[in-house]
Length: 128
Image: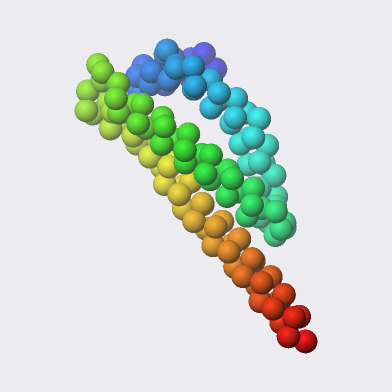
């Protein structure tokens, strides 16, 4: 694991893994406590069409988007990295942001359709 970390640092010069800011430790803990368990559960939940999947994945997407956007903003402000080094880092971080945006929109649309269907059912019951 140490060799992988050293390779990553040497290749990408990612300051988050060299001298991380205090808030980065919080983000790592959130990933360990929330992201990892939800990721494992969500795969099963998506396969079995579990009803709470859209809600949890919307929360997951928002949290991932905010934390990734924060990391991107911070990384772009780092002094001492060349443009190509920053581009390499963005090649790692931007896909996470894109996936979180796509997932957030998808889960929002799923939840919206569930809520609208429930509202239509409620209105239909009132008319009967």
